Image (cartoon, rainbow, N blue to C red; front, side, top):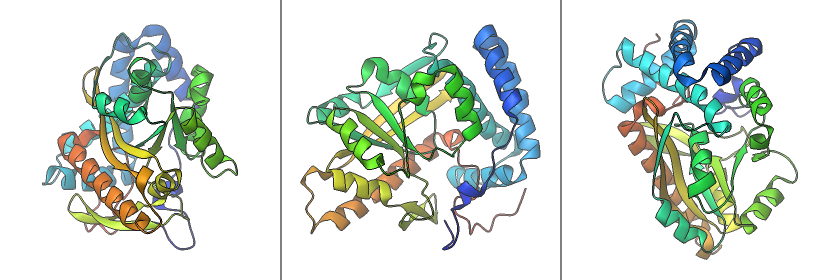
Length: 306
């Protein structure tokens, strides 16, 4: 997904939107509430769909693969609307204002059992809502949830949300710094849950090409090499928007690297990555609107432009 001399495709896309209008929307949403400001989200999604040609083309390609047929126009809009709605709901989830939202969870019993031995790694994707996971964690998860991420990704949105709830941003561990792995190891030793969106990589990461939704795609091996080095269990995570005000947070065991040896490490990493991609594909087919990679994930897609 990346050229040899440059960053991957997702890093080359600039953020859309105005920081001023983001702050206006935040101000209105927190003062008027979700029900009164939700109609604005419908217009924002329509504007994005009509003006963002690259994102529209990527949505059509992805939905065609996930649905197994060409996507219709209203389905492209539904896809973008799910993305816009998840950002809107993120404002309330960050502030602990979850009364207007319905959250349910699945797989937490297995997660608690694994956590009895120490910290756990949670591998998700740009699929659904991470904030739904973090909101659930305040009461139903065994440890504090931290997100390992690229600090330059979605800089405008993160800056706005940091102004809403600075404490939430303290749970983010930036990738690419000298002490990143030390901080990850420390939080795991303290019984924390470290979450990683493992479907994208920097230009320096190694990749494995695997079939995904009927076509080959490249996935980074870095997150799984980290798990092997730290000798930790790995769970798949997804905060799925089920429509309306409903979210379902799923946890599924992917791999346990606690017993991996140097001789078996590479095979264990590859097996875990295969399991991750298969699990992500299953959730994409079951809940296709939750996929939020609005660039050409496959890059060699022959699909016609929008």
